[in-house]
Figure 1 (cartoon, helix red, strand yellow):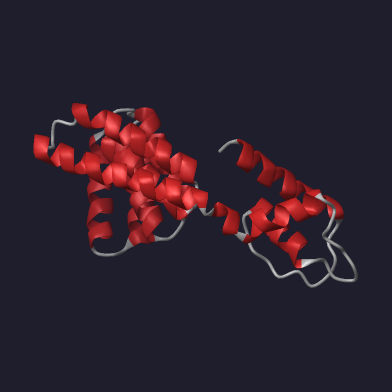
Figure 2 (figure 1 turned 90 degrees about the vertical axis):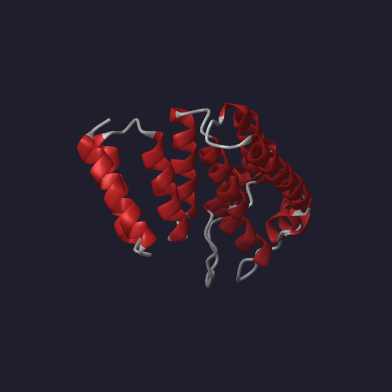
Length: 199
């Protein structure tokens, strides 16, 4: 491990503690550039991204930390928490299960702390499963069967169902002021289908 990388991490930690999340993010990036195989650096950068509400970046970094260190309980827990924020319920459940499986290898927790963490993670798994069951109430899941049945009419302005499906497919909600090509919505629909199939 590089001394310079550790110094950069320490600077990032200080900035994070001061509430300067953008500055801490930058320092963690510099630490990663010095030592790209250190899971803690990705874990810390995920925390900075989370504080900046950059959830996709946070998830990528938390998952990278688990790839570099598969027994990193905190990284699994952070991955799960971020996945919950993104409504990625299956990812959250899987990450919480991994966090539970790594608890037995965690030397910095007392047996009681391990038991408490296990209960916390099990409760989170239940919460994610419950939330996954409510996904049918989300507008893109309600618009999906209508699209499949060709019941979304596209007149002079696109149906809100098309807008919702397109937004879900690209991950950004936009206001549509003019008709968009049908292939845009089909691409969004196909991406949504892939998301459903992976759950």
